[in-house]
Length: 419
Image 1 (cartoon, rainbow, N blue to C red):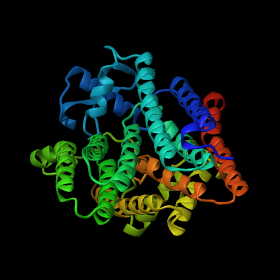
Image 2: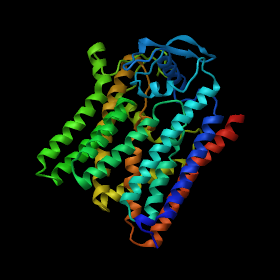
Image 3: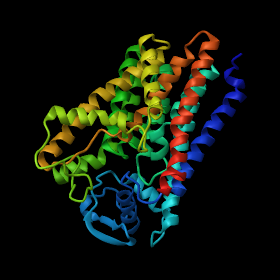
Image 4: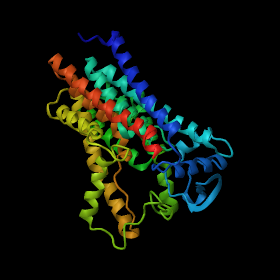
């Protein structure tokens, strides 16, 4: 028999176990994986070092280079190709010493682990407050905590983990807005979600912003006649929005581009002597969303079941309208993906034509949607009326997530590293 919202000790125990498993895999990666990984760790660490030496609120690429990979106490000759806002790097710069050593790298990786755990806890809170069965809650917690790519990103030197926090905040804000309508607390939560996303990277800001816009359109229809409340709500969100967009507006004014790009030092910039056709590039670009869901090579089919579970369960939640909130949340997330993916493709293909640079839609660029779709997928499990079937589906989800997340971490650490 499922327990009540107020007495879910077993659910908290299960969620705690999932969090421990996440921490185990993340710490294993953070401590044992050689630096740098393929997730641009050298560029991110160089950014952190630059913020430690000369902290600024709006950083530009011409302010710093890449560190020398052989000696992290020395700057190299190549420009740093990252153009993200400096929020994460200012935070991480407090934790590193001078000169930077191996211990500093592990400490910054632990910062990412902590931010990832924060995102997981926020999603568990959302699940506990909205779903009615332990099976649904544990399935959603598994999809969030044991995502193969997220668990690796959340244990690397890099700012992608902040996208997970932003997505979790956006999920909480959207649920609160649909339930209670406009208000101060909801507006601050929604605005904070956008600020965290936008100050991480433009992709995350667009995904979270469009998702929240979709949820607000639904809430405007459901909560008419609250003009003053809506006016205050929108003004608060808009104020946060200006804060989140400030670095990009500064880029536009100073450089004439929202994201000034310098790829001269990027290791994967050349595609050959001639650019690909648009359709060849588009197929390769979109395929990367699936092929990069597992962070380990070679990846087997089971490691991609996590992504298939997310898609399948979200389709069920959307198609059968198992709950009103899951319907609109899944729908708004889908709209955000449909809008942002073509924009990303157009930007990337333009760089490809101009500079023969290959840049795919890697799944880590879209992790802001993971907390949101994990909730929608969990709602599908929660909506299964037959208890035995519901428990069976939830058990299968938990098992496959365990395999997809934990096994690659063990293999990477204890086997691939030896070769």
